[in-house]
Amino acid sequence: MSASALDLPLGAHQSIAGGTPRAVERGVEVGCRVIQIFVKNSNRWVGRPIDRPEARAFRSAARGAGLARVVAHTSYLINLASPVAELRRRSIEALAEEIDRCRRLGIPDLVLHPGAHCGEGESAGVARIAASLDEVFDRTAAAPIRILLETAAGQGSCVGHRFEHLRDILGAVRTPRRVAACFDTCHVHAAGYDIVSARGYARTIADFDRTVGLGRLAAIHVNDSKKPRGSRVDRHEHIGRGTIGRRGFRNLMTDPLLAAIPKFLETPKDDTLDLDRKNLATLRRLAR
Image (cartoon, rainbow, N blue to C red; front, side, top):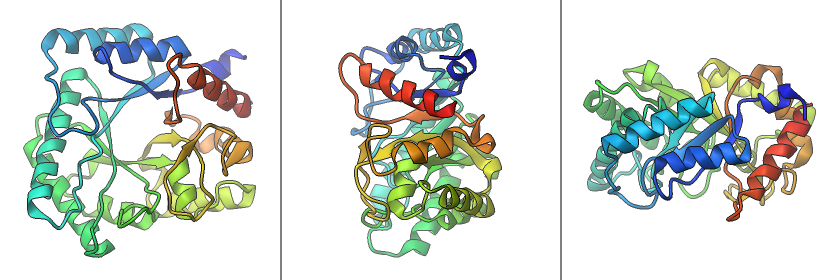
């Protein structure tokens, strides 16, 4: 493997089991240049406190590993688009708390699923998300962590399966410097965009640039898809083994416009992390 391929800003989501510094160790073990983590249990509202020694250890481990980027991903429970006032209030509080966790760990970016409108309509969902983000940003003005709105697959009433949704949220928030975008290959494919054919890929990236803007793209989730394009079903698969296939990921990995954007696997794992190694190796080969 060439040195340039190994230096790509490429990595994977890593578990924080045993403490957040262990995620860095796992990432280094499989050859990550960037990592993504949860800052708490992703399926619970309340997380174990992060004390000062752990925060210092995580920051030291990330520096020592020479990681090009560390990002976090929010809990799956957060829904800023909910029409239920109590759930939206709880979501705002949870997001503000996760931002504070990122501050303590020195993580500058936090990926967020935009949310589900629960039958109220896409425009209502977009408006609630923007208003909720404004409230979160007001609460966390001293911790200017950036929120990366992730493209969605379009399951149920989820907002974000059209690039225009992200454009409208980004355009509505009062503090635009605190929001950017995360492009998930599985989600975009499931939402109906073509990233497999060369012409379709070029059209999709041009469409994203026209609506959201490549200048606001801060992270890419690199996942193949178990389900076909347009299925609006979010099921991640190993690189090259799904319906995007090697052809689609060759488009991505050889695109000079996206070469510097950090890319994170969220593919299925095993206890040995060998699957991470294999998926990273596949992407690096395709980049050549």
